[in-house]
Image 1 (cartoon, one colour):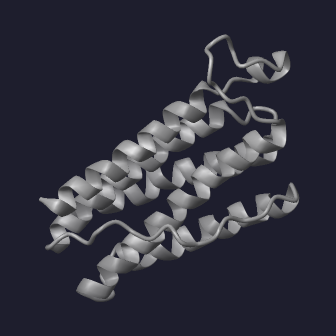
Image 2: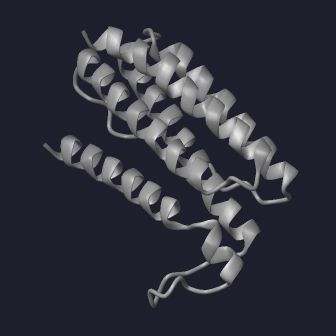
Length: 174
């Protein structure tokens, strides 16, 4: 029960971050206002980009560490080994964007989700995580329209989740 509660809290956090980031519109930046709802913080363009990149890289750190936990518990099992390598590549792509924009890369201290008791449950967790990841990138894409290179990376990462990782986890969950 504790691990299910922890997983649910992680998913809720990711969805809350997506909703928050999707609510930051370019219109608010141009007006330089708080959007008329007291307490809303509007960041500078670089600040917004930093928030979007941070949401992305923290999710990639979490995925990599979660899949490593499965490998640690069950051995070098598919698809976790190959998808963990993909997550490492995703992190490198995001680090490249941080470097391009002169933004400091956040510490790699997020950690993974608790490893389920069975490999099948781990595959189901992978399904949920990849759906949440793709949804997150949809929200992040909405806020980065002024950054074509960021959009390109976010689209590639969204597509990897939807068209490569998700089907692999769905197959292993069956």
